[in-house]
Length: 162
Image 1: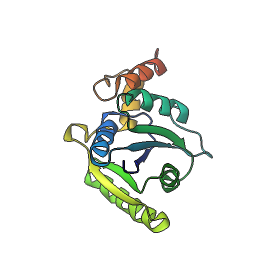
Image 2: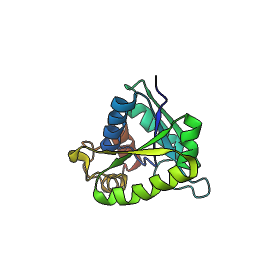
Image 3: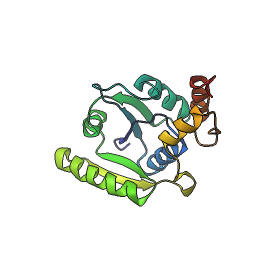
Image 4: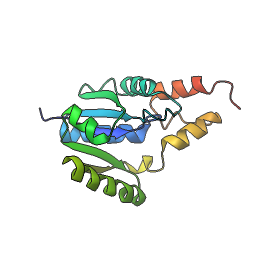
C-alpha cells in the first residue's frame, strides 16, 4: 500500500464536507491520516483536540484505512510524522484556493511536502465548522450537515441553550 496522505485541519467539529474530502482522498490514495491541528499556546475551540479526535474516529469508524491524531505543530511536521508525502486540502470556493495555494507553496518550500486540492461536492460548498457551531448554539437544524456522533455531541454541548 502507498503511504498515507495527510488531511490537516481544526475539525471543530468535523462535518460532511470534511467526510467527502476524506472519502475522495481514500479513493485516490488508499490511506488517510486526519490530523487535528491545534495551537498549544492558545487553547481554544468548542471541542478539545482529544474530543475532536474521538468525534472523527466515531464518524469515520467504518473506514479502515483512516487514522486520526492530534498535532500541536505545523501541518508539514504532522505529515512527516505520519509518513505522508502529500497533504490533501478540500476546496469549497475560489477564495479557499487563494488561501490554500499560498500555504501549499510555503509547505513545499519548507518541507518538500506537496499539496493536492480536492473540490468538495457542491452540496457541501457552503458548509463550515463555524456556521455549524453557530447554528447548533441557537438550537438550529444541523443533523443533515454533520455525522451522527457530531450531531449528538453538539446537542449535548448546547443542551439548554436558547
